Figure 1 (tube, helix red, strand yellow):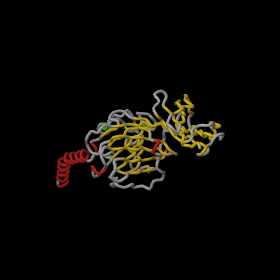
Figure 2 (cartoon, rainbow, N blue to C red):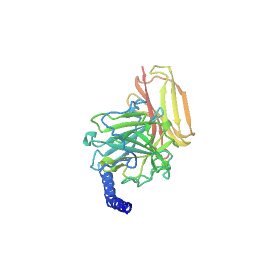
Figure 3 (cartoon, helix red, strand yellow):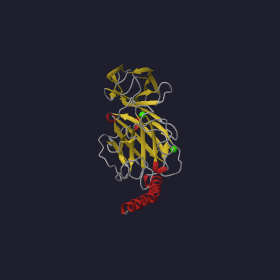
Figure 4 (cartoon, rainbow, N blue to C red):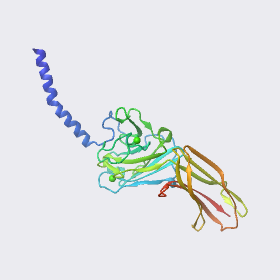
Length: 324
Ligand SMILES: [Ca+2]
Ligand SMILES: [Ca+2]
């Protein structure tokens, strides 16, 4: 009898407190929007200072490729723009917000990467509020109070593998600004050679960039260089060209041009090129020129890989030399 009474009381307590528990859980979700709501509690990580020692150097400022821009929807720090580049084995992203970090006590920005370009694998659309990306992100770079790291999608549990975070290769989150740069090693990302990406900021009322759809970063690299800096009449210039394609075979447009000291540009090569899968092309004697009498001053070689069709910039490089 006593046992029956205890059971009755037990169930009475469970049944009366359960709705309260559910209500509390829902409140916590809505007041603390974050990527890891299914995961274990994470120790807070301030954006104010870089928490990791960078293993890679900063990427070259001229290497950024514009991926997406986003209007100011008014809440929080709000996402403004994202740029990307692939440089010496590291995938870098630069994210700009409309307002500085100091606007909020914590920031929390995520960059989802669909590395197999397959929307049926990885994070499904509609998982987070307002998520309409058309991609299935297989990796999520998080920068902010939830951590500064990358999570891999776990298809078994249907969530990020938060227990096994992947360290970032690079992170720069300068104090008092509204821009950060984060990088991850290509070797940590299983990819077909192009990344479909979308960014989100839960603390800015789940702001998405772009609002709908995604951008694509192709992991191609091009480098152009000369055998020395100073040249004069009659010298032979060895023009070097390197191209790497870590992904699948792809057809692109290769353009090479030289800019003279007055800023006028002469295209010396512009054509379709098939880049085989896994290409690592390096040729310090791509072209050789015996220099005629030309105006003295600083010249610049430009090299670019452009999307075909459309001619969106995929990778570019430049190299200066001087005629004396
Ligand atoms: Ca995917
Ligand atoms: Ca937006």
